[in-house]
Amino acid sequence: MQTAPRALWKRPLFLVSVLVLAALALWLALRPGTPTATSTAAAAQGASAPVQPSLTVTVTSPQRADWPQTVSANGGIAAWQEAVIGAEVPGLRLTEVAVQVGDRVRRGQLLARLQSATTEAEAATTRANIAEAEASLAEAQANAERARQLQATGAISAQQIQQYTTGEQTARARVAALKARADADRVRLAQTRIVAPDDGVISARAATVGAVVQPGQELFRLIRQQRLEWRAEVAATDLVKLAAGMPVTVTPAGGRAVTGKLRMVAPTVDAQTRNGLVYVDLPDPGDAKAGMFARGEFEIGRASGLMLPQGAVLQRDGFSYVFLVGADNRVQQQKVQVGRRNGDQVEVASGLDANARVVAAGAGFLADGDTVRVVAAAVAAASK
Image: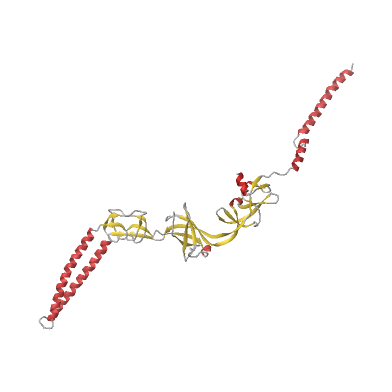
């Protein structure tokens, strides 16, 4: 009677133990990091498989070329000479203004006209006075001539002869004075026409019809011969490298570059800034206007250097890097020093061998040690 109940009690305990052991085995099999047959096989397969390249690239090598050596400067564009044109006759009213700002004028061209009626009347009066004085001179000359003829006969006293001679000289002097006044009237009449003193372009106009002008009052400004120049400040250390006649490339703000010629280097340097002024003629200013800011470059010579495409040089953390491609197609990051720039080319001053294989483009997507697939440039362009 006791054997049957004991067997019934032991059977469930056995089953529980079996289930616990099975659960423990399953947990150990599924626990992270525990190698399984499948994972072990995959690891073995991965170890034997080659590393897949991360990027397809083209390579290039530094090319040696002659690079221009330049000195850069900033400055303003100004008129070579700007003439201030005003009235010379006082108290006359402007009756006509013939030009506007921006008009191109020739030497002697009429710019404005002043009221001339008063001056013409004065000139007419002077001409009448000259005619009267000339008549008086003729009479005085006749009297003096008769007195000189009678001097030998004694019919006339020496005192009377002296009076006739003096009268002749006085009449002649009066005629000369009136003729000089007539010349002054002609000048005053000519000054009622305000004309251009030289060829050029009108840059400013203050003349208004009806205004009464005074001598020296500014009416117009004229850029002589439409000639502009670029005045730039150059550091004293670079000033000694410049000489008259050098070609200069000047780029106005927002405009196209124009070619100029260095006309003069100032003989002094500012004691505060240690900069000196240079003057550059702009024979063909193009889009440049007086008053514009411009940047310029003086070509002082040429020097040989290694160049790379701009896309091959990567900027990181304030330094310049390139990626070298090794024999196993793994890339290595290389720090370099860059120099001048010319278009889309960059000069490599140091840190790179002339025979190095450099990733030509896409360096920003690479990391040190990446494996790449190298293709020819034509193939890469076609794949895009």
